[in-house]
Image 1 (cartoon, rainbow, N blue to C red):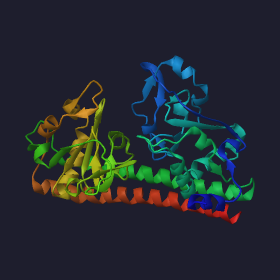
Image 2: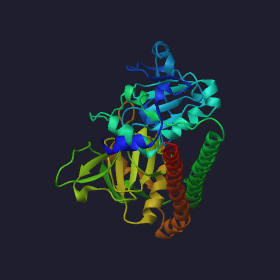
Image 3: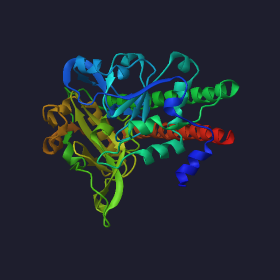
Length: 393
């Protein structure tokens, strides 16, 4: 018996997900979507990020295709589970997503109204985050070019559900408190970043007045992304930042990535690297918190000092729409490094940039702190869920 089998056995009395009372259906979405700019919005795997649906610019598909997949036509409260790439990542459909559909790499778990009233849907979302179940999901996934969790494996996923009554109420109360704290932390991170943006705007005089500028390429080293590489003896493993992860990062700090790649030790971008990626209408910039390698469609900028890094981050955030002139392709999904490097950004004196950094740096410390707490809080809740199930064995 493997360690995973022993861990799952230790969970106590479990049932397959598909046999949990109140689970109405488990299905994946549209296999061959046909783009339609006026059609039905569709959620893909890359839009499910850190427990939320990032739907700023949703893809749309032909209505007749959405109609062929009624079990994945979303209603408020449906649980979305990623089946390809970041397998097991979850989010909950909101009222805004009613009538939308999902792509093939996303499964929809729908509970009956009674089960939702009993908190079964909330429990399942957090149960999928528990350590044993994360290992089950990884072990059950195929190791093809894109890691894939078969739908049957999701249906067979073992679930321990606390009995109705005081115990389930206590569990759900704990989860509710955690969710409130997570939402508050997300708001704190947004406000801290926006406050730094506001201070940057105050530090920049009216554009009509003369202001020193500098090409981006002279503020730091600009590097293009590359394809993912396999392991090799002379290479080191490192986080691989895809364009979608830059675009969908919930904060200006990219904490982790779904995939790893292998690069020469001197080719790794250090923590604090600026990662830039475009999509129609905007160019998004985030700071990496770990060593990283950019994927195709992502540009990386390494600066010499934190002062330069923070000023450039907010300069690029302020110029998000104007930077579209450096993107290329019909869908504006790639950046022209030379054009991007020539793009002029405000670059006042060292003193002005240092004054801004003294204000912005503590605000970014707040973002990093609450983001770290998000992960720790989730671990506390999921560990407690697992321990309770083991005690009830």
